[in-house]
Length: 402
Image (cartoon, rainbow, N blue to C red; front, side, top):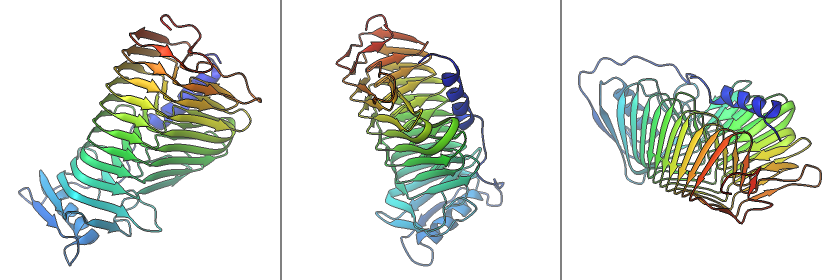
């Protein structure tokens, strides 16, 4: 398990999916109305429901802002058709605050579409809102953002992003819950049970079941949960295909604080599948994680030539964990390494224990290694960070302090 072709090929594929900007929708110019607007959308009636919400966002786009859209407490706004290709709501091009007051925006349609697209230069603040049921799809090209696609500035406070899916058919997919290509801040937000899925017969990937933070983007996650999300890929490849970052995938700058990343899964099924980074997969950028938990995440792969790496964390960036526990994570496949952490770059652990993780294999493959940490040519610095009780070993190869 060296640092040659297998590693570099995976990074090239990750760079394609996590890389430069794409535009998810057409962007219209603002104009017309001379002042900011405040709009209240009832749960039902002529000016309420999903139609009323669409009308309010169109009005907000035509105002210089900041504009405010107030939703009815506890209401579910059901989107039954896309407003524009690929999106249930109008693409936000201005500055808007959506005050949910405990409301839900849900897709209920045979037609696939994501819920919300924040366009380049736009600013959106979400508050006390649930976004669910979004479905972004693409065939032969990469699909992004099942629930939310952000190319501007997004702030989510007390928000629940759950049950959204991004799906690539014959291509890649990223960000089941949220795909970020701008600046995003999540505070007291739950990213729960979202899925990124991809199928194919060539080289393809599903990355970021919960969240994908792409190259050049910036994301901050504070006092939140990223739980029970899945990145799943299936098919076959002459070289490799990938399921990575069941919880969070990042190639940009990422800061995580007081957040639980738990019970996420990366699952690759088929010939030459790689299941990596069950909790997080860091392909590039600077990552700081403090006072958080990376627990009970799984990276797995099945089939001939299958490999799994980094049950809790896969790192190819510049990562620093402070007072963050990495516990009870697991890799499983014919070739399995790094039950807790797989590292191929720079990783510093400060007061961050790596305990009770497992790398498990099958009789068809090479023996598993690095139950706690598997270091593949990178630099690992341990300071006050015990690596204990991992199976089949704690560190492979030897790391000072381990």
